[in-house]
Length: 462
Image 1 (cartoon, rainbow, N blue to C red):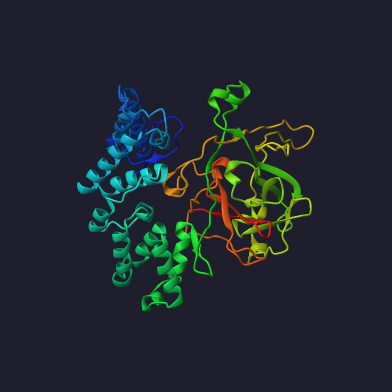
Image 2 (image 1 turned 45 degrees about the vertical axis):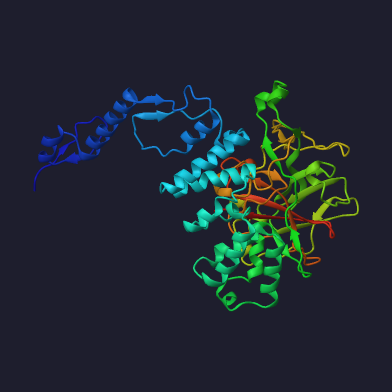
């Protein structure tokens, strides 16, 4: 047997064959490879350069084109990010620049960059409600059938063509049904009613009845055959203010008004023992709630963050208008086998609020125990509304937290049914999981049944 010799690297106790040592200079292969990696990393750090593709460029449309341009990875280049997010840049587009970006998107699609073109069109539709009436026939000719929100401004001629395609094109039938739901005019409503009254033969090939596709576009067909909206408008963005701006009193950096979000309650969940938390507490006179008929001056949406991750959690209102655990809540099967402590959500960093009932929103502080340092977070609701579909496409990574607006479903649309009256509950807002805790995932959705004065919270994640 060949005698092995120790690796010459200090601190390494590996033994190597003499033949290997002759090739590596006396080092074992793991040490040799690690030294090569370290040398390569030193080379990268010594030679890497920053590249600012936006330097000297002030045209917003050109900046967006650069943002959308694919980049070949080069370890010696570090691209300097633009000072604003893509969402912020899109929102700054003028009407003329929006149309310029629309033309650019169509050019990309014609040059076989279909995904890049569709992405731009989706931003324009969701952030600016830009109609694509003239472009939709070409998209269909190129067999582009997704995302369906692009087709909501289709002409009557295109709408009628899609109705025919539903009957004839089984491969894309799901897409066509959702497109029609987004168009949602009276002709479409009557067509879905007809399909409900006399289900076509192809309906048996679907996972759900044809009229259920309307949920994806945020409305439903009532028993009387009318369109009923399933989300409130207008929509207002929710965000967390920077501590430095709040502490320094720099109001010019703070958009909107204070709002009470993520306030822990002293009441405990009867299922898991966690504290309830008020996801949102907003005065009903706020413009975002103008279409909501609520008996209390505050709309306080409370839930258990743990349990609403597994099942819809309902809350009723007591005689004083305070949320209480609903008798209709049903513990999901297998819940008792879940390690609740492992799933608990850390809310120690969230703020609490003591709201003045006469105000539109509020802020405050919360502490746990006399010796604990008070931790504060400041949340705000935007002063101006945004487009109702702004936060509807979760994959676009918009600022997802909002009051009002079409939900940004991570999975399929899933509006809960009120357990008291069996009506579909309306979406009233949503909170990004990252707002709730660091590295949080998914989205918490808030709903209300106005006749029953009941709220609900559900959760989805990828």
